[in-house]
Image (cartoon, rainbow, N blue to C red; front, side, top):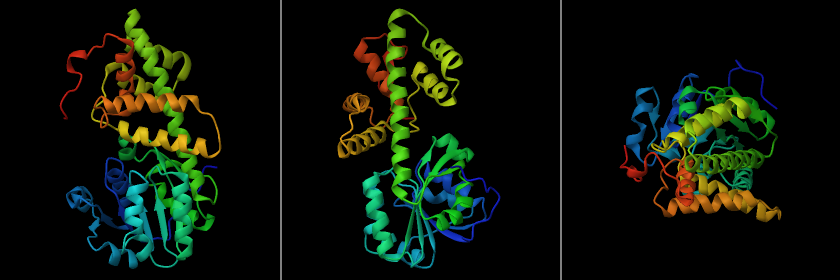
Length: 317
């Protein structure tokens, strides 16, 4: 269900934030607006400057800072990054005090989250999983959709802080990995939309239909969705850089979906198709392009005439 208690204050007065990438940086800036005392940590200290200017403090001594702080947020790209910061000597598991809460907000595999939750419990700590839906523009605006799972009393305490970063906040139970299942299913569903758009626009170009007009008509007649409209316009205009969500991360999420499907012996033919398309894009050098560049992959496969065919691989901005 969606949490309805907006306006309540969290009992936490200070926290540590780990991860200041395209999503983590604006999310942490919005969290600062709650008035919480926020220490920030990143493997690349130069990335902390905007947060320090906004009132955060740098935490170079992560172990010492964690030992004095009952709440830590992590917004990291994958299992390996979270495993490194959680499991290393002086990391989250070693240093977070008994009763401390770790709020993990990245897109991670459910099996990894289950193991991480178990390891936290063994140390008397709590894991809350709160992955987000939305691109960097929504992170900046504080309008992310957040899916949160964990022990109910701990959710009560952190939801007011999550609401600084997005709304609605959906509470989906006490098992943290459920939130990660939902996040992966959401990304898989969005990937299916990208595949449909990519193929439709490829055929549109070959038969002389305006890609931008097609997107406008389909959104008006069928979808009426800002997600469809935004991605459709990006793909129609071939605006794949800078990336809001990199193709290599899209491939990572599809692989996680396929792994879960294999575990429960579920057939997901579309996931296989998406995996092949994104992998093909990466082999073409598009790994750091937005994953909507799947549209370019399908257009090239179809031999479609593209507006920007003369600038197939433009330099980084």
